[in-house]
Image (cartoon, rainbow, N blue to C red; front, side, top):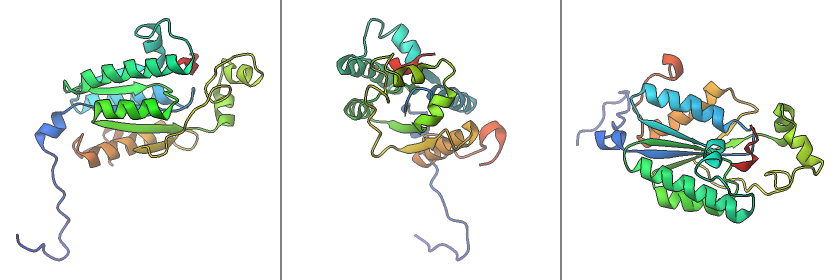
Length: 210
C-alpha cells in the first residue's frame, strides 16, 4: 500500500451501503422535562431528510397504548422499558431507525435493552433539577418535592444516571440544534449516516411515567 503524500488530506473510510441501510436504535434517557421528546422529534426530522425510515416511541404514547395499566413500581417501570426495547429491536432489525424517548430510570433495564438491540446509541439528556423545576409549567416537580406525588422519578423515585452513555447532551446549556448536530456527528462517526450537511443544510405532559 503506497505511503500517503505529506500534507495530503486524511482519507476517511466511507461507510458501506449495508451499514447505511441497517436499522439502529437511539435511546434517549433522562429526567422528566429534560427535553427527550423535543430532541427525538428534531433528530427524527433530520434523519428522515437523509432518507432514513424513522419511528419514534415517546414515553407518554407508549404508556397510553402499549403499556396501559402499568404502575410506577420498579417492576412495572422495567416492564415498560422491556416493551419499548422489544419494539425497537423489531424495528431496527428491519432497517428502521427507532428512537426511544423515555425516562428509563434503571441502569440494568437500559443495559438489557442495549444487549437485546445491538445497534444501540444511548443519549443521556442531562438537566439539573432546579432548571427542570423552573421549566415545569404543570408544577409536577413542585408537588413531588412537597410530597404530594409519589413515585416521581428524580425526587421520590431514583434515577440512575448512565455511567458510560454514547453521548451526553445538556439541555440547560445547549440549544436543540447544537445537541442534534452533536448526535448526528456521533452517528456519522459510527457509520450510521453519511457525512454531509448539518441541520437545515448548514455545515457541519406528566412524563414521570416514562
